[in-house]
Image (cartoon, rainbow, N blue to C red; front, side, top):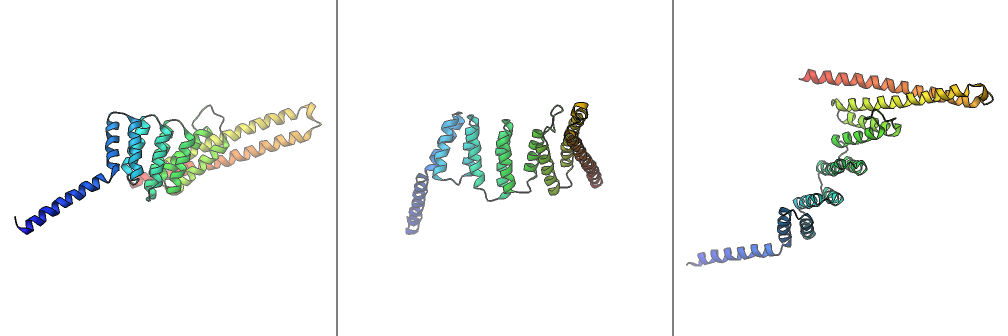
Length: 261
């Protein structure tokens, strides 16, 4: 064997030893392997624990964060899985990817019928990407549902309904050519108008009561009831105008979409 050949053999051996040394020096690999084995056996807590140890050694492993989150979720730990994904989201530098991850967390809570944390994480998605239309759409839907816009029996909550209208306006501003936000805004406005019409009816009944003989010495009550009736009617009239405007805009958007096709 020539000196050159010996040199190659020695260099190759040293390289292999170096590679093995690097592998031994990386304990994360062992924990990942144990985690994967536990995961395959549906031992969710054991898998999550091993992934945690791997991440403590090397936190820059997006796939391992995701595996840990999935193990926790499969083990029934919704909050633990969500927090794990939040930690991963916070490490992202791409605003759109960060927003997408926060939306994924929000979606977990929506599936669990927990709108409060869902709303919180949709808001986080918007902080990451203020033009995230998916987050805006879901925030509008949550406000609509809380306001009673999707219910035929609910009296309606004007605070949430006005919030829904405001969110749909933001969504329209980001993408004015999308038809669905106009539809959802119109639904919220109709529910809001119905609310103020009912309030007017209550004020009218109060006015009728205060107009009776036994209340004639208290004209201020009658005046107050009539004032409330007028205020509520004015609000309903203004909402009717907005509803007509939204309906017209929706028609225009539809026509524009058909023309493009």
